[in-house]
Length: 452
Image 1: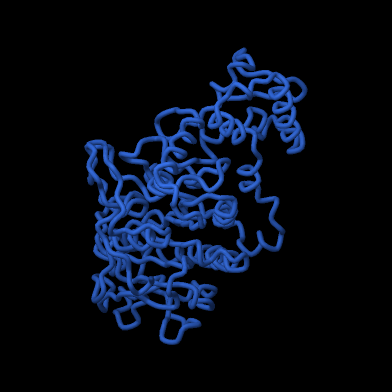
Image 2: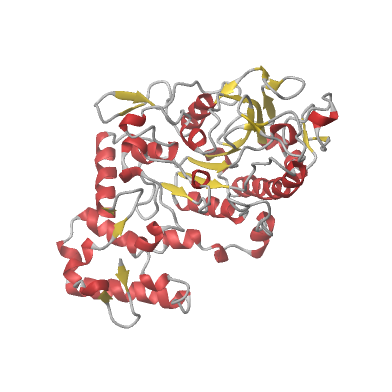
């Protein structure tokens, strides 16, 4: 890690300038490796496939950790008994014939921009993000390191858009129940293709020590420190001895592009107000807060060059006070999700960026004595936008009580096949080589023809 005391260029632990290239490491996942190693791996991949598409497609994957109640959001059961139907009424949307829960007035007003999947099946019942980041059951290929998340797959197959911006970024806040803050594992691909976490040790290894809020007087001093460091190293000729990948690694360590993307103060108050901040945080307990601004940050990261951004929004494990939770979490999601879609469209990005929000399973049809709904892996839901998809429609349905898929069951694997296809990868033919040397398909599902 570098240390700039603003005025003279020194390195922590007495490391000299000629050894500076050894300290710029990223701690992706459980292993530590230099950014130069990552860049070399990406360059090797691009050399193997020089005709890979260069258009920047992206995914923003919003994980609603805890299991959102489908029958209180996109699948209101007006004909069910009150103890199943709950407290919410359906409201009409901008698309004739589609109704959703009354909490989501903004989404209802622009339903033509969304696709609602009411029949997601195949949940294994685990309180984790694994199926929502990989499309596979957690035990699949566990002996070889496990299936990689879509972010790691995209980082492996498509590499960086910009060498100073990681292709895969996880914004998930640290949660007491750790699986809810899993941005997506790299599995058998290894730590080279793990996600970058701005709020974790990755950022500590990327920025200078002086970036710590308690020691940074203002942003100008930090940027001045960057400039001073570059000048001193260039004057010493140290960069001349570095190979191209190490030089790029140093550029990332001293680049402001990623920092700029993470700096929401660069946005106008009007845009920030459109997203809101999701405060006060309620019903958080051991889960994620409702950080509306993470959706704005995700847009900024994609705009800067990230290909996959994942985040965890709220704690939807509503065993008690389910309807109060939905009013709180739902209204905040309603604001920031519509703001994201509008923002992407305003910037001409919506057709290239796929947005999805979903959880690990649904909730019970029956309301319990605590006015809550319990775990229900039999069926759940998802909402999607962008990616050039055919939106303004509902896919699938559930029975009268919302307990099981009635028609058009959609698996996690089918949704991931759609996401991969939106990224320009053929889910039927594209493979990864596992540690045994065998090709592995990205998913065993099929892209949804309704959306493509």
